[in-house]
Length: 460
Image 1 (cartoon, rainbow, N blue to C red):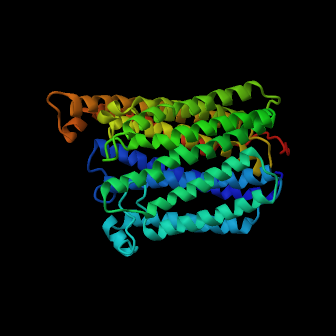
Image 2 (cartoon, one colour):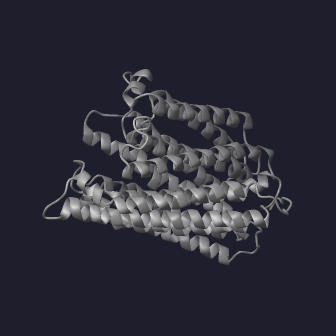
Image 3 (cartoon, rainbow, N blue to C red):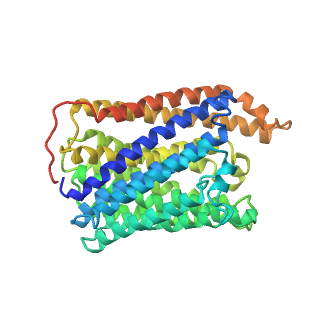
């Protein structure tokens, strides 16, 4: 390992994987509750399971992004991290705050949690994905600002590269747009208008910069392709991401009471959003085909290629399926939305974090790559997780199409609950795919403990 301070990334990655496993377990609980309505009730009601599932998703990805930054920023800047001690302090604060928040969700009713945490002082709770109590939100802001200070000082005092600057811009954008989670107007239209400034401009804006930087970093390392070539691709991809993503926010404004022109602006620009993801796929395969070195970490290369393909399918193709206003009118809030969300988050963000972990963890453990036996197990994990996510998406898409027909288009529309009864077969199939996904994640974790002949680390 070239810089000692890069070791700070290790606990962040370990925490990310642990929280990822927790997210999947609560996903399985929700999957059963779709079929057996009173499963684990009243201990874990559906609304609590859903809240924990989505909050763990956000928190483990933030741990993953922070770990990735702490690894790649020193290497790109060619200097040690500004303050490794500060990074470790923020790790424990973030981990403890996140754990206490989850315990709060599970231990007391949400309304009671709001009273106990000062929501009457500044009302920020009760909105999807932003359910965190006020102290947790404040803690996230403090951790984010200290984290940004740490990596910004590292970049400012070291070498500046396109990868580090794009990563830094994405992380600053992540922190800035999260501040809108504190703004909770009583007017529902205004609330939703600015709520999307956090949710959409995260996942379809600044997170894409972080994704691009992480993927470019790994591809530089595993292919040996000239940095200039990869950086040119990176600039084009992030330019298209920002142009389509920022104005494409309008595809959430169709039916909330916003001006009518958003139907056109949102439809046109969000229809362009698959383009940067397609470019990312071409980019990944092109760089691997042009590689100048045959890197021993085959698993990391596989994850990198998979990221491009699955991000394009989930965020691009499945996003485009129901992004146009006349289509979204019928599909919004159905299982089609869930299908898009599952594959997009897995393909674009979960996979790039796993790519980064796959590449960096062996190096931080003193080897260039895990043993061949370990990589075989990891590749099995890749295929089990990826194929099962494809099937989860297909089953949810089928459920969503049937739901739209029975509930929203039919001349004799059925009620929501009556419609759900007709979708049970798809929920069983989705649950089975979720079990396979969990097995794949378990294999991914196990792969790091498989022993075998290893290669010594190099500083390439």
